Image (cartoon, rainbow, N blue to C red; front, side, top):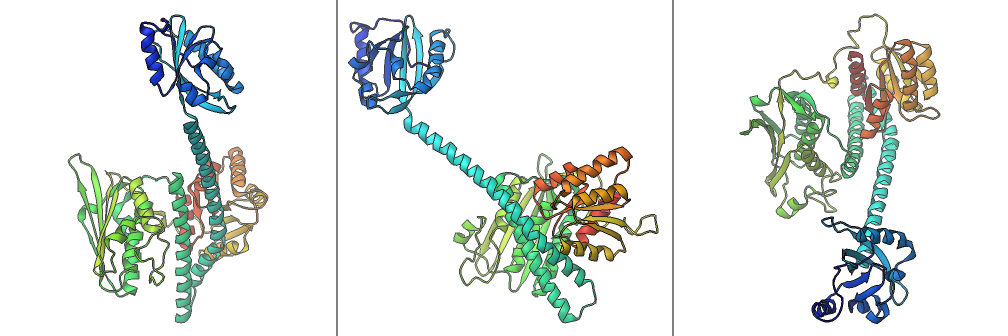
Length: 523
């Protein structure tokens, strides 16, 4: 919009014009009065300081001759808007570039108004601001691109790590269920613990990536709160016993019942806090207390405290405790492993769920972590936990073996599934890619299909869509489990969108695979 504003009044230097002269003389911004032909009537002396032109070099000349050629059309549009603006309409601004007397261009931001036969305009040099905004936009675009690249890298790395890890954990799990000598069983346990630790590390890194990208979604469902707490408690009670620690649990009667929330993320937080308490406590005890309260508005809150007699931390360490990659003991002689991601993830998860987490400690005496989480109570019966097993496989109304189609290109992963399903006497057919899976599914009859997501040729998603398309013509439907080292939320969503009934992330164990099969057969 051409910079200018008209008051339609006298622009002479006498009378009121003397006041205009004084106003023009003291202005730090660019002031201009032009007529409706675009000829400059008067400019402020600030034009000399900002654009290098003396007033005598501007007055009596057309103003648009200084506008950058690329900005002329937008400026003409703004000129017409100013000249035809009706009384009471908002004053719109315009940003364009004006040529300095030395030849370079400055970016100016204008406001203008018509009064009578003149346009009165005021402009401000915003060259540095616009350049800074452009740099900020470019930096933001670069950061978003880098974040996307990081997410893609982490997803790929997750897949590449989980694929061999699936072989390690799956085969060790199968090996642990065979007759082993005590020394062999101990070695198998060590391998299994190391594999579980590595899986946790991969999951933590992926969680951080999803939190940073704002893609970590909660899954609200009705669940039995005591059952949800029992899993982490049982695991950590065994670990505490291995260290000779007392592990005390005090759960109030009000905790029993069905609640609405994300039980998986709640168990993740509790597991992390209990694991830390056991890890950082050499002797003494770990105490978990759980209770439920209601406020004046009948909102229900779950409160958990984890108290230990471990190493503790001081105020300086406490300030860093919930930061990423921070640990209370970060020295080269530190006794405890870990990435320093756990507590950061716990705080992020609690914030996503609307809760709070706090910590207090005294070095050498112990630490106390407290969480408070809004958790509405519901009256319905909680659905059964697939991990508990509904017994569907064992109670099938048929004497024939469970017939399973496995589409998996990795030989080790094929063997893992075979070892697990041998234990239930399943009839397993193995194919190496999606095209073979499609052919087998359309030519044979199966109770369940286990489909890897990434395979050469036709991938698992494409094969699943093709199978579902074929089934639409036959009115028959076979449950499909997507077994994938792609474990991020978008991969689960892709599996469901393709027609899979369930997404089971690798590494798989006998418990997770059989629970998944029972879940889809029950459904």
